[in-house]
Image (cartoon, rainbow, N blue to C red; front, side, top):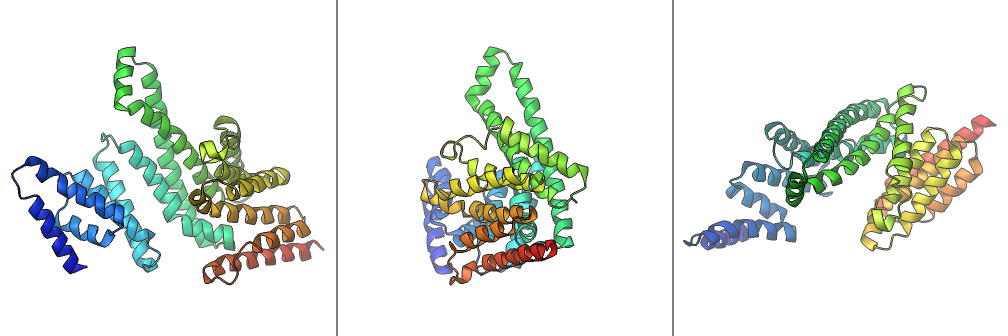
Amino acid sequence: MGFIFTIVLTAVVAMSSGTDPENDRLPGKTFVRGLKQWGLTDLLDQYVKEFPPKDPVEAALLRRELRLNLYSDAGVPTSERMAALDEATSILRDLIQRYPNHEQFLEWKLDLGRDLIERHAEPYYNNILFRGGTEGDRQKLATLTTEALKVYEELVGHLNAEIQRIDKLSIEEFEKQSRTGHIERVEQLLPRATYFSMWAAYYHCLTLSADDPERDRRLNRIITYLNDESKLTTIEHEISHYQAQSLLLAGATYRLLRSTDRAEEFLAKASQIALHVSNYSERQNLRWVVTLAEMERVKNLRDAGQFDSAIKVLNQYRGTIASDSPAEFPLEFALALLEGSVYREQASAL
């Protein structure tokens, strides 16, 4: 890699050595774009160290992207991946603090919330959802989701205030800001921020006891948003690309609210929609929806005392898994634990 890197860098430097200002500007960005496209992250990392962008924000975002690439590499030891994630999130926090008036500030806030609930919190809610979890998992998840909810609350508040300000603009000023794309950005960010805040609220509820009044309040808020306000549970997935995930979230929420029939209805529909998405790549990306929906169905039926139905759903889903694949062992293990919980509850009921 070092030999190839030297050759390529020499070529880039040579391209940039002319007197044409266009040559001074384009090669670096073109090279970086090419390295991203080809997935040559090691080479890109070295290049950024040798030729960091002059714009501090651009340089920071590129460093963050490289750290996230390392975090996403399953072949890297877990300790290195998590260290890379910590660094990526730290870069984002720093940008938010240093550049509150930057045009990307709102997107940074959205991304910070997603870092917290989709990356940092993932191992803890997975432990809870798939293996029951420990008190330590719940404590760490509570800390992360509390921060994420605060981030989204601030972001949604800011976006709502901005929409109110836009509504009061003169026609001339409205058209001016519309041409810059600012109004469209705000209108797109608000539903995204609200949607992700619902997932943060759900994960937070996993850390609360069943008799905590805050839990039911948050859970009912999720249902109201998904079914009545956004209607994400009814807009066809091929249009919204969020229906399957929203049905899953609603179904899982109904389960925590002890609404057995509604939970079964929404979870089963989430699974079926995710299985039949027309785009192959998207269908593969939604496998987690099917897995979680089927496991939530088993828990829902188990908690309602419908033990035979719970085992039937579990075995049907188990039949879709390639049990001879080592990659599926964690899922097989989670299903075995879930199956054991059904039989324990059945024995207790008898």
